[in-house]
Each structure stands twice: as structure tokens, then as C-alpha cells.
Length: 265
Image 1: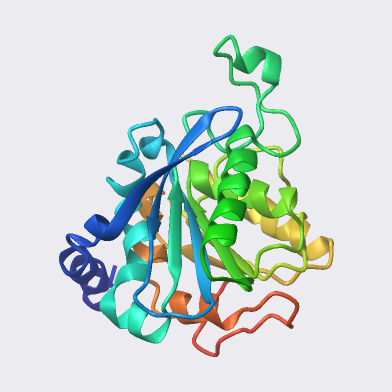
Image 2 (image 1 turned 45 degrees about the vertical axis):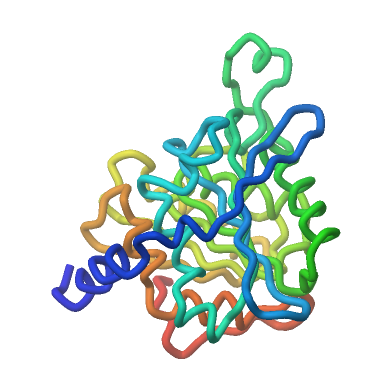
């Protein structure tokens, strides 16, 4: 909560205002329809793709809420002019009205959300959207990244487990409860974030996932912010090393750990 750190958050909010207008509104139709927003960079050639999974406040089918409220941090950071200049990329923000993790299909039809193991309904359709975007645009398949907060943090864990070895890196933020223990796709570089005073999603969930991942042979990074509650995304997406760390990772190479990364052990 130093003045310097809080200034990064305040500066981001002011400096990113209006960037949401750069997203195109699109829809994908399969077994059901998933709205999504897509940012297309000015740069040409094969470029990275960042996938952002919204929190519970972004749920719905209006194709707007996934860009608002606390989601402004995870959707706008990549669009900042200085980041696009150094790391031009596409950004995909799908919107789910069925969550991200897997629920019992029969009970879900009755409006009962009972979590079960396996690929989430929302995650499965979002993966189809990713494949459609890869087909339609010049995406570098070795530089596809996924991140998300709270419900979307749980979705991030579920997504890398559902398509092991596909993503170049993942950055879950205060991931909510799911049946994913963190050990899926251990070869995927991962940097996890959580506030140690989170009153909504206990930090123990992140600690258990990170421990399971390390026990399985993975080498994740984990950062806990002292005294920070559930709104940890404000710190996560303004973490000075995050953007450069994400884009330093490529599928199939050894994970890159920046000397500027500060993580818990």
C-alpha cells in the first residue's frame, strides 16, 4: 500500500480510460452462443493472443460487462499504448453466462450449479472461440496466453488443464473454488496472484494449488499481496513485471523468470 504502488493503480485507471472502445463486439455460435470482444492491434504479421476470463461480475450475454467493473484491469492493461508499442497483441474477452468451471450438465439445465471434474462448459466454448480467432487472424500459436480473475481465475486453472500444453503461459488471479487442484499442464509457465486478506476467495485455495503444482513437478511463481482483499486484480494487472513476463514466454521453451519478479516461496 505504498504511495508508489497505489499511484500505479490510480495512474492505470486514468490512463486506460476509453480503451474499452477499441474492442470489437462479436459472437460465436455453437451449441449455444458466446458473445466476445476482440481487440485487433495495428501491427501486422503473426502476433500473440491474450485471453482474459472475466469474474462473476462480468457474467451475462450483453457483451459489455466483461469489460467493466473490476475487469477493466485485465482487459485494458494489454491495450495501453506503451504496451502495444512494445508487445503488440490481439486480446480476446469472451463472456459466459454459465461460469467457467464444469457443472453437472443435468443439474445445470435446472439452474443448479454443482461443480464436477472436467472441462467447464464456459471454458469449452471459449476454447472454440480461441480456435475460431486463430483461424481468422494471424495468431502466433506459440504465444497464446490466458489470464482471469476470481471466477475467471478458476477458469484459467480449468482452461490450462482442459487443453494441456496449449498455452504459452497463464496468470490466474484469486482463482475461485473449482475441482482443479493446480497440477494440470505443469509444463505451462504460470504466475499466480492472491491477496492474503481475501475475504471472498480464501488465499488457501491458491496456496493449495501452488503446492500441488510443485509436488507434481511444476515450477509456478506465486505472489501474495499483504493486506489486500479480493480486489487483488488492481495489484495483479499493474504489477510492473507482469506484461514483460507474459510475453517472454513461448510454448515449447523453458520458462523465463525475470529478475524483477518477486514471488513467495
